[in-house]
Image 1: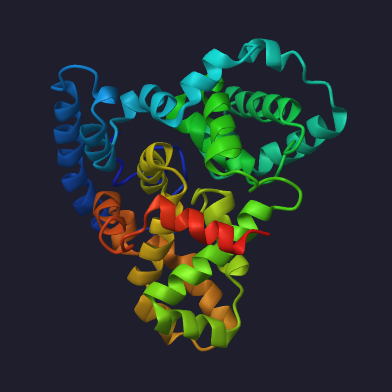
Image 2 (image 1 turned 60 degrees about the vertical axis):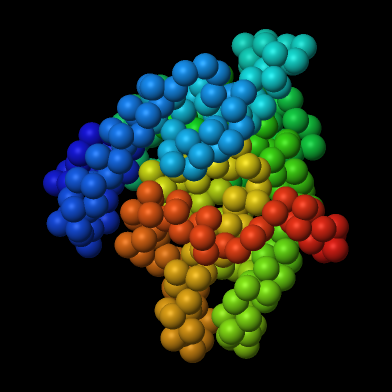
Length: 324
């Protein structure tokens, strides 16, 4: 990652906002570069197959996967490699089955809307073309989901991270079909269930915040749907999103809830200062600007300290309880 304190475009090609604090970012990046260098050195000194050492693997991934290793590691820990090997058809063979004009037209309409403030999508032809093929291929081979808005942002960030069309397809497939089941089907039953689960978790861990949000009358769907559907893309800074995805591909969807609870706890004071719906919605939209959120290394430490003892079994029981 290149230092870009005085550039109007960040490391991943996104334009910075007009009010971007370059001085603060410069201080943060000078520290984060040292962390990235140290972590890269630690990965380089690994002996043996890290994938056969689950405790070491989890510890290393929570501290961040070096960008040049992300594609290989994501493919392995997510199960995308296994999915690719077990598929009867190769990715190129699946691409050849794109023929539904309605799906094609819908995706092509969404392509210019996908990260229009990103120079790699707005000024280069190759990345939108890769995005089209990833989305269209996925939509044609998964008839239940087809194409759903939100998938374009996930696939777009996968491409920015991996620079690999085929890997992005298999990673998208494993996300939609295994890690986030029934989020993207027409009824969105998985998403609706998980919004109720989030409500229960906030009520348990932050009852004052839960009561305040309930009294103002903001449905969780209004403030947090993008958290689930877009996996925090377009919601949090890109580097923070990739650090979250490092853990998501290994530990599954409970990471989404850990991040959600951490965001709410970090912004508890601001949430409680709101008095009406518009203010509360703005508070949720502004969460990306919190210094602890921008400092992704600190944020990843926070999500395993501030989100409580959230186990996969607890999450499974809550999903059964609220299943739609």
